[in-house]
Image (cartoon, rainbow, N blue to C red):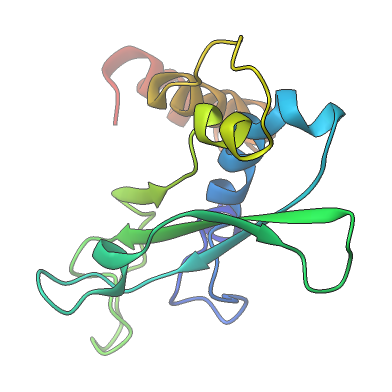
Length: 154
């Protein structure tokens, strides 16, 4: 699960949040039958004034390696418990408490490709439900954890 959330403190971190890429793909799914799309997420830092995340704008552009493919660029950032800090000796590692995403809307994707927008917009709730479904389907830990989550949340 650390890998799918793009945990920046992991050695496998490659400056992206795979779950955000999957969310963008869910949003663009109806267009994928007509257009070749590639989904690119870039992890950005956050800060009130100087953070890159606040100023990032999702976009669609021609792929640099293929003339028949377009890239949809999204941006992500994560928040962690303060104890999840490699600078603290014996730091405890926790999952992200929040993953922020800047995604291109379904309507904007349709507009970019001059298509009639005649489908339902995907909501954050829809994406979060799919995330939970993914965790339940792929969970390899103690089932009691999922049972507790189903009962009380978090």
